Image (cartoon, rainbow, N blue to C red; front, side, top):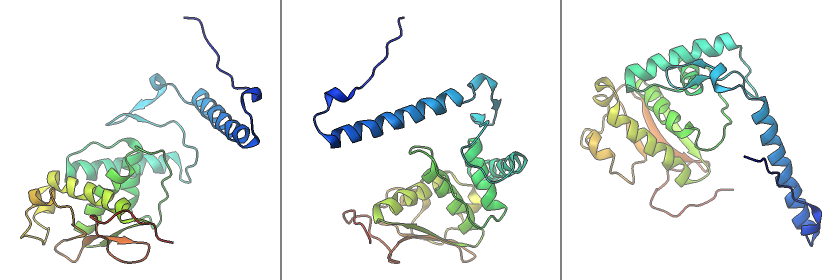
Length: 211
């Protein structure tokens, strides 16, 4: 198939703002192309329990050896308590929490599975006796992660399910709850929704922004 090239030239734009916007888009596209060209082909990557082990990150402030160690720990704990296989980066994040890392920054694209992974980590921490608070700028955002928490509880190990204090609400009933803002566990742990304003949120309310 003949290769075709699409180029956008300045003559198609009638005002400066459109031109600036187009140049910004082109610059982003060029960056994507550069990253794709520098990516390691899948056939050269090492297999992981799910997917592959990334060959490089844009930024990773720990050694590859430490990253692998954390990923092994995270994968083990996730499989033990939730019967799921994590991708390498997800397992590394989980392992960092297990190993007591105080602060973790995870900057990824959307649909990467951050909320899904955080939901699992929140349960794990609460089960171990910690108070976990899901903070976000809006109630809707926090509720998304809480929905992941509730979803993971459905498939969590029996030891976790039986530690949920809300015995009046069976685990399966939590799945249909639209207003759950806190789940408490035996041992003092809990998972709770808060906003940046410090108040619990009502998922039924319209999305609001806090300044």
